[in-house]
Image 1 (cartoon, one colour):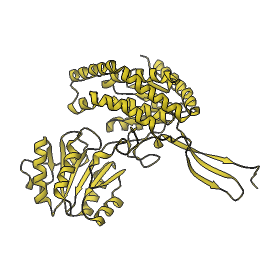
Image 2 (image 1 turned 30 degrees about the horizontal axis):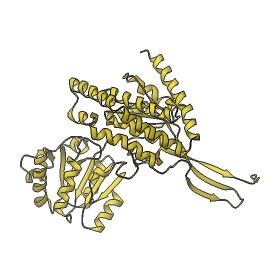
Image 3 (image 1 turned 45 degrees about the horizontal axis):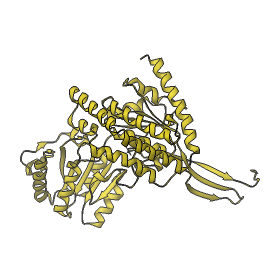
Image 4 (image 1 turned 90 degrees about the vertical axis):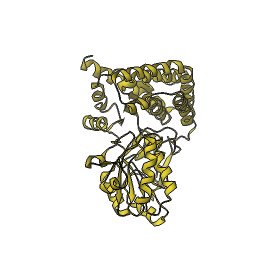
Length: 421
């Protein structure tokens, strides 16, 4: 495909998406919810073709030798498929955010100023592996009255195409323009460059995937980008922690699903409890197949632990591999997290209210936890329905991105004939 043809194709898609977004902006919340319900119904009706398409992607992925963690993210099990469909129904039932009044200002001259939530417009989503992102992203955009252009990874091409076809079919039954949800149907990598440079046609780009993808998108983009570079998540086990509780939380944070961005990648342990806690924790991890990389103090307590390199502290493994460090106090744990972390999700396990408050105040991350697993950093778990992603930016959106983060605002001013003196 010639680049000029690809450029023209992307421009045409964006133009149609803009028209669809204007239709959506006029729709009521009830109409948008009805469209999502119809989409979910269509996906269930097309379940056989979607599962078959996913099986084709899995077979091709195994042939090309993609890693186990990527295959896990790619696979649409029956449970994941059902959860994906149920997610649309849940989003349809969420309270509407469009048109909500964020603030009201009454001026002395009689002007009434309201700050009102409005859709962003046309959003481009670039993502890898997980086909459920296709449905999650599209449904959140429709609920928030945005049109969306999707560009999934080549490894999930068949799955994504089948999901979008079903969603378009369901949406059209409810009167939704097909261009409200579009998929770029090419694996040509230059399509990403074309999409992120459509100034005036695409209002926002959200990349979801590995750090290399997100950095490449940010460097190429001429439209705003919300970023999530990586999830180097930490758990600090304080000297006052309940050790059995800490073992269960750390096990969950690392092992429940290691190939996702909110899984723990570094375990920090207070030196006072390390001789008691760390061997017990290491035994649990050994049972789960976790490979441990530790600092010299940790290695001395756990036979067979590999010695960590400087690079390990920055690494998002997305696998059953964990970095471990013993720290002298809470301040050093906080310093380590702020230095090596990715500002995603970090937790302290402690019985000390003072230590908990210090951790919450000083750790510079999008989500911070006390006595809970970092695996809860998720739109569903936060009650948002599906999420668009987890932003590690500090402007506009931070942490799990739900409906509110897919809106912007405008000021609506009512007067009675006022003029400025």
